[in-house]
Length: 208
Length: 246
Image 1 (cartoon, rainbow over the protein chains, first blue to last red):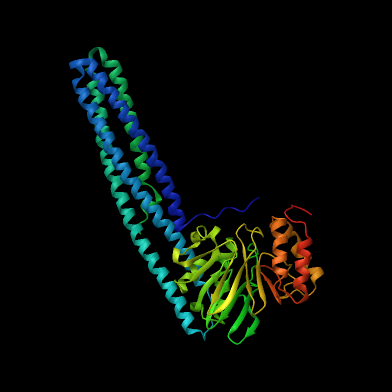
Image 2 (image 1 turned 90 degrees about the horizontal axis):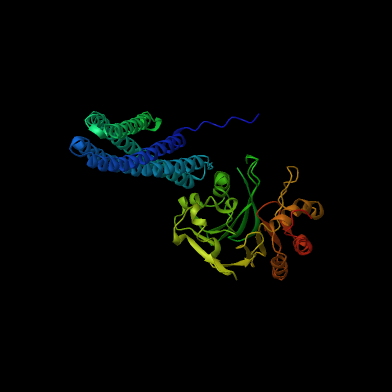
């Protein structure tokens, strides 16, 4: 039997979490694109249904705006994730080099060399500290942007439920309108679940 | 920590061999590094991989001020040759790395700015270490397609990189080749597989046979001296290379 792979920790674990966050972001972006297309179709359907579906048409338009806002928020998250990958990669590299430098042995009579090694290590440590500070700032921004996205999705949920109610007044078009509004509701729930998973990410729970 | 041994000394002109690290992890190939010093300046030849930096640095620092190493010669682009570059730059950010033009855009992935690199033309070049001429001798395709040896005419030493390299067993770790016939068995497989061009090999043998060489110093294994230098050149000239098995 092969040896068990070592569990990643520190920056390596952060990188693993970031990859998962990125996958979730990609999922939400794809779903937001679907809402946009569905909302466009729903607007046309409401126009064909006439005055009975006027309220449904207004809500479809709002859902289209919602998908645009959601996409923008996801783009902000994407930029933050990119920056976080850069910081974590630098942390991994600096940590590796700092570890290697700390293994240097200098004879006691080589005081000048010893002080140069200490200075090089101190410079590495200072860079490590700067990367850690920037990463902590990015974590905070990511948490806050995901919370904003969650609030936006709550609003999307309200719109989808209102569209369900409006569909009931769609007279001859009530059936197709109900089907569309049901799909809206399902998709918004899907996004809600994805954002819930993001909020629970180990990378965002770390308080450093 | 690796051992440092003086293999040539003439006033302040020295060649130091940095060899054999008992603490080296077994999964890393053993390497020899060489430091040429002259006029208080140092040129490190194939400074080694990043993982063995502490062993090489500690050994060098015991004899020479690492900040006075202003030049690095990289025979080719392999990680065991030059992946420690970023750490050497910590001690001299103005350090110059001499390497084949072919690798001058690849090696910066290990670290360094454009000003840190001197791209060597295919025909070679004469480098200067505080006035000491050192000749970058073409050894292309042996084994890298952009490959150089370094010749010190004054010391009569050729640094031959992977040419002459041997993968020595634990019980044959001497600095010099003592018995050519038994030593060369440890070099044969390496040369057959790693050296890819018979034409390039012939041309190298002719070029190097014309040089006045007392010591032929490879990156792996033991140093050839005296008669063994020409024994090696003749052996290599007759060896079938570029094959999986002979």
